[in-house]
Image (cartoon, rainbow, N blue to C red):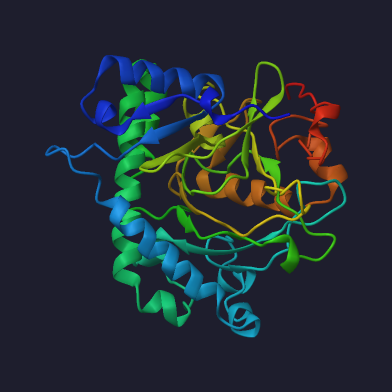
Length: 349
């Protein structure tokens, strides 16, 4: 069975901002072992008050609910493949990608809001009314998440060699086009799903850092040392931070991509799962940023994003064969209701 989230280290944002040696050591260890940690942001302000992003989180959740309350026909007008060929904005219906159970599709809706659009860096597709009416909120929230993310990157640079340090400093300029996006996923309750829809497949994130705001269970991360899964739900005033592929590449493997999945939180008495809300801020490098993967292949930020995203929609055999989905060949990290029968073991790519 998955271990509890007490196994995942907590790092203070205040400690990161103050360059506290203990906090920085915990940060680097977390990024280098499993690529995941809980970031405590509630006491990071100089006057001891909680971080202002915590005031915006419930407002963004309310906005997310308004979006998904729109009629399905309206949401599909903003379908992500129509919205942008980079798949960084627009609506995703449940069932578009593989699910967390073998042979099934995913069980979540999503709406993506790219930073490029909020900052008018590139031409943008249209937004539905709830977003149009709350662009100031989303812009403020996104700028704050970007600042938190780049503060984490800044704290990592002193422990890196000069080459990856330089790459980090030049790959995340907010005024340059990137695939950075805010995601508003809504994981549907079992009553609203078809029999072939469940969860979110195991994967590593395309980008560099993911800030996940949620108060409901379902996220599981892979413990690299023994292949077991750990359930992670951040306490109030905290967020889960995942390391993604491009940060691993840019640091020469010093930071490790976090393999994670979302499983239904099943009520043992009823066998049903409840609605799950989350906000995910995906910090990704600039479109023209350059880096080298583990196999020595060179990519730009845009090229890697396009290549990885195709794998999310590929067939199971292709996902197993090339290993890009989870960073491991022949490992999809699929979930079963009876995890006590053993967790699938992962071999390195």
